Length: 120
Image (cartoon, rainbow, N blue to C red; front, side, top):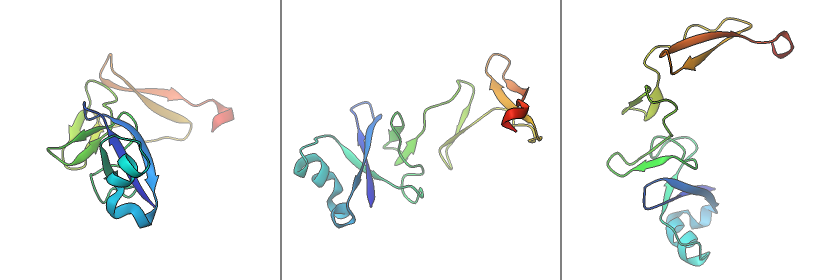
């Protein structure tokens, strides 16, 4: 099955639909006209072989880079233009059993938190 993302005028993904393999070669026409859905459909893929990331609702489509970009999780995070993934300005600390680290945008650093015993 092929997947296509409907891109709004603001280049934001509005929906992602599946197209039968037999219609993949004309996915835009199949969705917009045959199914009368309208829209601007661009193909995406789960394995990121095309357009860097699998499109999701709220992702941005960059025509310049022909890539789907996920929403920026925090203002301080930086977009890597090689893989189009957002990264924190500081590397996450190593994982320890029973502990997790959550990003704190106020202090621009990771905060350690303990996982309750019932969830370990």
